[in-house]
Length: 260
Image (cartoon, rainbow, N blue to C red):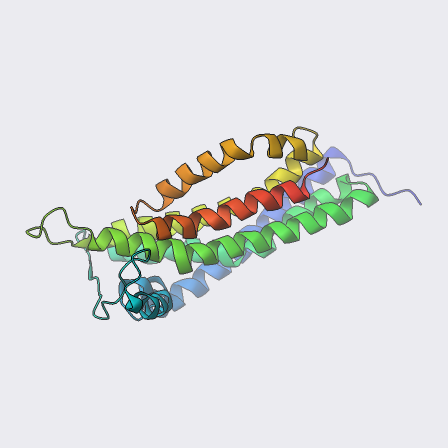
């Protein structure tokens, strides 16, 4: 049975309605997130600023053994005060954070709309593999964001806020600085976790093979170590390895998904 062919204008009309639906759904999510943001900000966004954060409590128990390889998280009184130095910062942060939260929450729907738009251009045997790639890419993005929130950002934030060039200097973290680092590190980890999907796509196009990734594995280790050091500017080897190991495992996973 032959599939119905769509004209250029039909594709354009389909794209227009896809964009309209995406914008409409995004607007709904932005409104919901805007209303819920005071609660989300107190219990989610600002959670890493106190010693009650789950990662800090867990590491506090481990570091109680005075292990020199682990950072010191034994301070149960850890707390960072976020200050606002601009008149409109709180209002603008409320709006921008609502947008970013809405964008993350609607990401599966965005992927669905992209899939629905490109599906007619694919052969039947391609639809299953591309569909699985979309689903896998969505899962890996959320997993990366979770790792960024639960591990990378708390480690980085606590190291930087406790670092002292001089005891005469008092750290006062502005709201803009905090949110910039918070959003950047979490979204960077979400993107980094797309490495296996990127490797699969490149191999699918015939640009790379498994042998290519294996041949340059040593070079990749050095690059990933540098990337991990940039993400977590801590001199602590434990913190560096916490970031490096998941990224390296993603590289190995990309080799597994690549073609021979």
